[in-house]
Length: 89
Image (cartoon, rainbow, N blue to C red; front, side, top):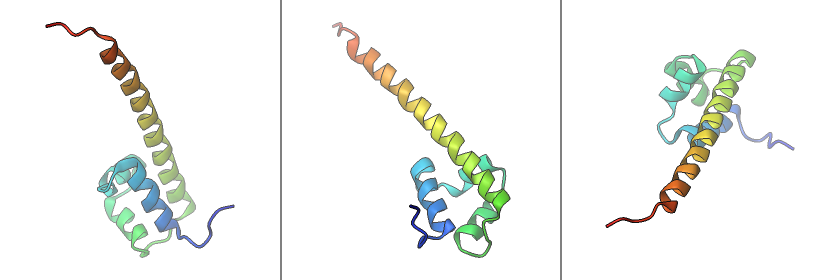
């Protein structure tokens, strides 16, 4: 069951930090197709998260998560490749 005691802004901040790192506002704004100012207003509680904005953020989060999963898988393949190489002196 969802934790209803947390605000939308708190959840957005937690997801964004996990997916984009500590300096996430500009990247999320770009990926969601909204202004960084709007992201800041939502996080600060000055603007509500409308259904349209929520949908845009969720789309951006899903795309970023997919990109990260693909990057992790690719990195795993490359690490295996690197480890399998013989050292040559």
